[in-house]
Amino acid sequence: FRNFTGEGFMAAVLKPENANALRLMQFISTLFMFFLPAFLYAKICHRKAMKHLGFIKVPSIPQLAIIFATMFFALFIVGALSEVWQQIPFPKEWQIKFKAAEEMYNRQMQVMARMNGVGDYIVSMLIVALLPAVFEEAIFRGALQNLLSRWIKAPVWAIVITAIIFSAIHGSYDGFVPRFVLGFILGWLFYGTGNIWVSIAAHFINNGI
Image: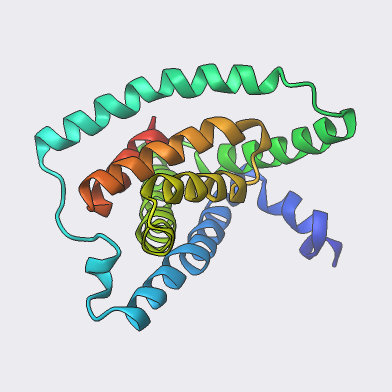
């Protein structure tokens, strides 16, 4: 019975042979946590729900090239900030909790991103890179940032607040500041274009790399 509850359940799910079960859990959880709330909010409050969330036009090839270059160079900034963040002398008990959370996060990613062949590669890119990009951008940029921009009439603050929540909700404390920067870039891309597909493409490129 212990194998289906608490730590026993997680230990079973995190076994490499159960990668598909973990991927399915990831898909269902992100669908219900991120995309459906965003869609329902837009559906209730606006006549054209998908358009309100920013689903308007797929980026062109030149736009995708610019997005790729932006995210590629952003990786260097994110990497540098990650090193700086890890040098901050948090209390020891905090560091222990941070490390445990980070190890659990990394174990989940390693299992879901297992690639023993072309099929595994395609599934991993779908579950780890594409779907999170679509679902998370829908809730954070399409819904939350959009709503905050209308409420507080200050787009920069809407981007900052959304980026903080975006980073915090991942529960990866070592990557909090780098992920905040990523969220800010994604938010700025959405604000500048009004097109959620632009931030989805950037998010997908980041996750894929």
